[in-house]
Length: 351
Image (cartoon, rainbow, N blue to C red; front, side, top):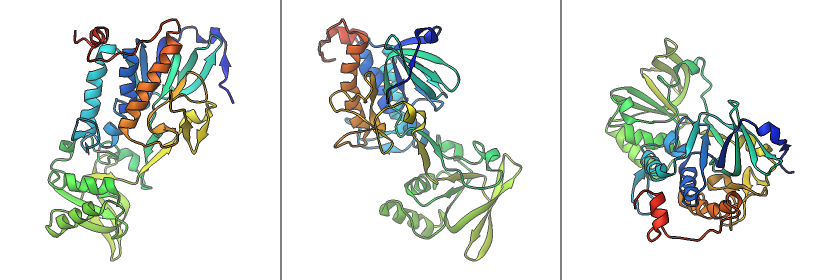
């Protein structure tokens, strides 16, 4: 199934760019860099409210150890470094919007429309949307919506925001254990609640958590939260059902780590070849089944695919070479190194 085609008149009034990058995670940001080196003007769209994707949203202060030349870097630090790196190319960013419609115009360009009604036309589209649109799984508790963002948080953006608070972490996976270890010395008190005394996280994290429990620095409760107590926005405590009955826990901040619901979203209806909700691409250009549409990062699949940020960086570099042929068909692209090319150094503002 090919993309629907729209008449050229429909595109009147739309913003015009060389390329649209859907997704502002690390791979999408590095795509801006590679596209900028070959003179492609880019607009980046992300459903989240800021750059960084899952790195900024889920583990901004958690170290990443497999980025080349950076022995340890947090998700937020990596995002900040990438934003600094792409600054010379002046990409435009659109946050808090989702690309709902993607069609090909009569002139061969792509016509995109977001859920906010924004219309954009571009010669190439780069899908770097990670696993697609993702939302944290919400515990089925009455009135929870009113506490979200004030007393209930699905991600830790700044550890200092939880300093001096009575924190309850719910879950038994890596996220719950990692933040238990990280916040034990930050929070006024910290309670870890899990429905059973078995954990899915890394064994060494489980051992460290149990050591903190033995030292009295973390309280471990086996059970499930059944009720929230507060004024509707500020939490005062929760009721937990345990083996010995109901127990009241005095807490003013709750971190439920029940996982994420990942949805491919509108991408699934764009007529691209898919394999188990991932976009099939070639390994020469990382182009999809639709010419001019590329997919890089965790959202694509091919034989031997590794879901690593560094793999996405490699994919972005090869994608840009092919994208240049669509955006500048009359210009021959000469491969150059940033270390020796005066023209590339001028683009980067270092010469």
